[in-house]
Amino acid sequence: MQRSSTRLKLPWWLWLLAFLAGSLLGAAALSYTPEGRTNLLWVWLLWAGLPFLGSLLALLALVRPPVRPWVTRFQSSLSAYWQPQPHQLWWLLGQINALWVVFALGLLGVFLLLLLFSDLAFGWSSTLLTDGKQLTQWLTALSLPWQAFWPQAVPDLYLIEQTRFARIESSDTAFALASRWWPFLLASLLFYNLLPRLVLTSLCHWRARRLQAGKLQIQSSQTASDNPNSTAPLNQGKAADWPCFIPAQYAGDSHDSGH
Image 1 (tube, rainbow, N blue to C red):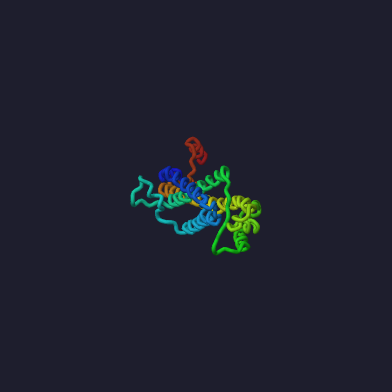
Image 2: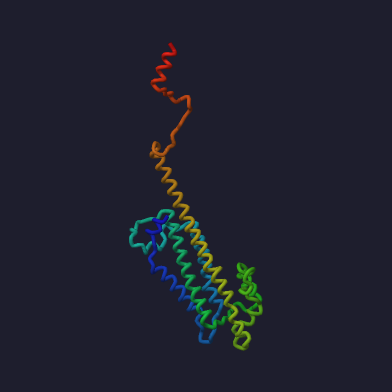
């Protein structure tokens, strides 16, 4: 596996590009509008909703993997007719998911930096979602993965009602509550973006190692069958089938005693 992964090593700039793309998306999603608003529903869609949907599609794609993943286009040493072996294919799929992990790390890094050096305030606004209770039920359901050990990252009805944009404009208290949305966004980024891609990356690399080990075992068995004398154990057989060798001096004594 190490030999194959070295041959199919992705270029370094592709990893850098994934990190920069995640960083730019994070900065753009948290940029304030002229009214000083950051719609957390839009941020959640970009940071958690769409990435989680992409992870589900990637998981379904593993059922019937592509013949040649798109990352092979960056391998200048490979010919246009080259087809990866099964263990190489799964290793490439793992690298694709690893690129998304780096993308999520770029998002996470920018978010943590802005949390440290700026005062982020979030609110929500929607034409279709007008009932705060309904939105509370949806966000509570989305918070189930961390609800037991991180209750601060679960938004309640009071926070949702007070941080609607119409309420923020007319209430100083609501504006102060707007900064309490960051635990929910951070947990969503970890559990719906970063963690699924880490699981897919580990799964693909584990599958690649298993296929590589199976290939080596088959090659070893074929070598043993082609050279049976060199690898097959000595067949002792039954003791009665083996000839009895007696030293010459004892053989002579036995012959004389017979006479």
